[in-house]
Length: 397
Image 1 (cartoon, rainbow, N blue to C red):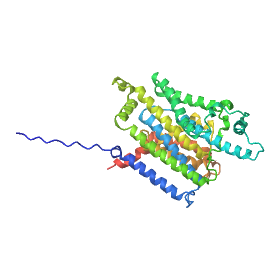
Image 2 (image 1 turned 60 degrees about the vertical axis):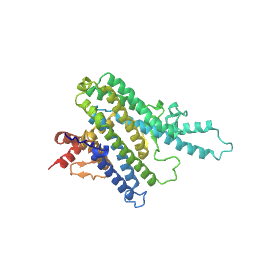
Image 3 (image 1 turned 45 degrees about the vertical axis):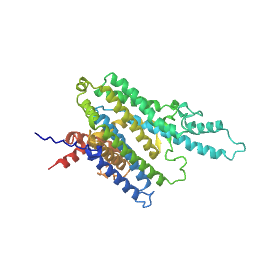
């Protein structure tokens, strides 16, 4: 009589155990955050200036939108040239509350000594005049109806870009627009939105944009060094959570289907998968995360205007992902960080100009040329980007 032995079930590995690169990234991000915190002016050592901490915080936000771009392009195959529009909309949404709340504090303080206490209508009119007097208006536009509520404006940060991406994606994907035609449509959407925001009657102050966003209402007595450090922490947390979210999204069966759509969309459709639903989910999710990144970025930048949403910004975003390594989440982070910090150094006066005698090389004027040459070099000699070099070093015997 034969004896049979029951095979013990193999324990299922956790998500992080199956994806050790995610754990390594989160560990590196935590160590970087701790390093900057210890050296920051707001912490006390003052090795890193407040402006440098803001630059690093903004860079983390750019890394987050680069990861979102990598998911929609590198994994799903949708070359979107409009994701910076969602980034800007997130910035406008939080900027409206920042500007309204700060102006309200100023108005109420100035009217507190009046002989007759002002009514709420008078306060609202004074706020509207203070904000929109620069564009010749004294009326509060309807889109500012929720600007006095932080909770509602935070919902706007998520809902407005998400709804725009959902509607645009549904119309484009159901029509089966793909390839370069879809890229042109996303670029046209971005250009239309940018041109619309340049008008003074849009309710967002036209070319003037929203300014003074670094002054956080209720925290006006807190030093900027401390506020900058808080935003840096928030940016690092958002990048960590966003990276973890997208790493989970592109793993497992869902990630396999998304990559299959990138490689051969028609074959995936013939296998019975509803391709449009997958693409719409990825497009909308990445748009929402991009908006959150923008909502963290612009309070550190201090100002936002329609030029931030111009199509060239989304093209730069695609360049960052290509340089870092498309199809690798950490590659997108590397590309965005390297290009962003290099841009700050070359255009911010950090790089010394070179005098050849017959010509003086000014890096502020030549930075875009250098970026273009770098993009061409990476495309020709390192098609997998900087992230691909890491893969080569790890796998090299």
